[in-house]
Length: 413
Image (cartoon, rainbow, N blue to C red; front, side, top):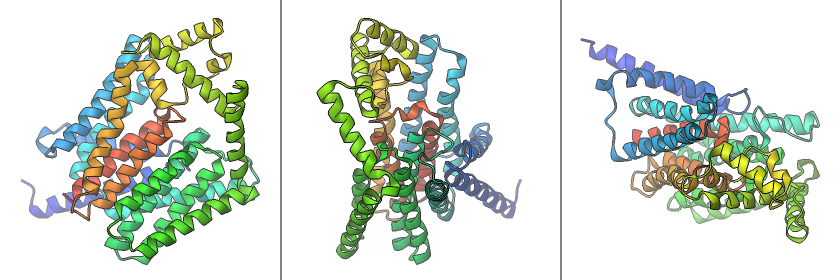
């Protein structure tokens, strides 16, 4: 029978392992090829050691079970689509990662990381991608920032890291009373924001005001009015500078988006970024009408899309894309209203859990609940212009991000 001293030593080693994994998950997610896979793989492997020994499983609360249920149901819906649609077995690759996150949660509930590793990794990841983006734009003179994932994924995940860093400023300022940590996390916020703007990916900009309001709401009872006013003024100034500075390319991207919308509405032009999206969304709604309950599956959707093109009902440009650039329309076309319901549950069930802890009297858990809520709301917004979960980066960052944030919330129960 192990001694108390050896049990304590084992627990310390387990937490250090978790700290390393969580720090790597956030810090190298965008600046190393498949960087988000390193920390998540470590967490999954650790989770297997818990899964294999039911006697050491953590005591699951009702919200833990809800989280596992919604993850499991979404996985089953995805796997069922692949099977019924006759897709290659390689298509299971992304969906299986959901199960990996479920396994990792068992470990995280027993061995949550330290706060410094959690917030430090998030800020480090945001700062790293901000520096890298700035180097490419202003030193190398590159027009398009090249990440190791698609530019939309790159820009939006950079924005997410920045916003989560901002959520951590409250922890640093109110809980740690540390000006150094506050400065580090604020730097992460501005770096993540800058990387997103420099990438030219516009999807993250849509939800940014909503996420900022969420963060302000989370700290509403702890922020003095002068600080709140100063932050709003600083944000307005930052946006104005980024918009006006020619080197950022933000103003040109905004004007181009407005022009694209006008061309689609006036001339039905689909040979633009926004016009192509509008045409894909219209196509997706036509597909969903044919099989509203269970959808047509990925291959069935592509075949019906080609039929619509042949009949002249939609523009041929839609066949150039493997998805419909809207998570909700794409999901309805592929998996019907059942699939859409599972997608909404995937976002709203964790969001409800985080929101409940945000509004509780437990101020220690609040920053982590807020970080989790920022993750959920960001993905809800990103899905309006991109099928974020059709990419490895989108799957890994969401599912492992949720279980990591939730383990931090549960640590302070």
